[in-house]
Image (cartoon, rainbow, N blue to C red; front, side, top):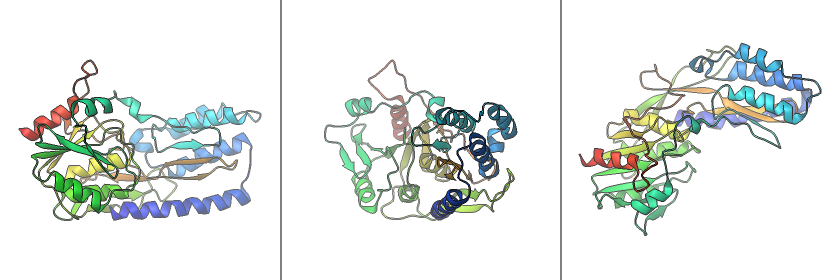
Length: 333
């Protein structure tokens, strides 16, 4: 994933350069100035207009009609925040000192995770915590269950070596990424490096590099390379609409790994890396400025990576987790 990491390093630098220009040359509290600036920045730099079939010119007409020179900051924020939510992208936010706009992609599907059910019906009282992971033996000790709730940037060789050594004799692993909203992309390669035995191409990335909606850099290859103790038996990765950003990167990369299957619901997407800057009035914004493509380059999955095996929670039965049960069945069969 080194190309993704390089983009992450570069984006904050771009943002810092923009801040200096805004503060010195473009300071303004005029509602129209700020609205037009945000619309134009999105128009020239947002990466997914065509995929999401958004008519950004029509959006301008609709929301510009609500701008008034005497409107309050709160009212202006509401209009601009609602304009950004038209992109249906949780990497797209407006940030002020009194509010933050967001879309809420996890609400596009039903809730498919309940921590209490897992702890009461699957884990022992002595389950382990290793770095960001919660894990234990399940299914009478035949399967290892590993819960990974967030990409915290703290995945390291020690905790992964311990986990894979502990479950080395199991028939399979379940890695639970449900409601994992993302975080540090560096954790993606650290985690997935344990499930490949050779350098593996998992997809492509490209960066928005011009004002046209289809102006992008050349496609760059994304690889996962093996490292540390590896696990080559069956792996079921649990996903849902709350699996977002780095979680979706992980899910998409598994499409190139034959020993891993995705179980659950479609992820929330979020495969574009976010970048942004500062408006003339000091508010901040961000939105997706890159695209991620699968191995065929025909599919982007920004709207979600589908499960290989579809399974949903039954909320009328609080004694079991249908997604875990489906994963267990796949491993034991």
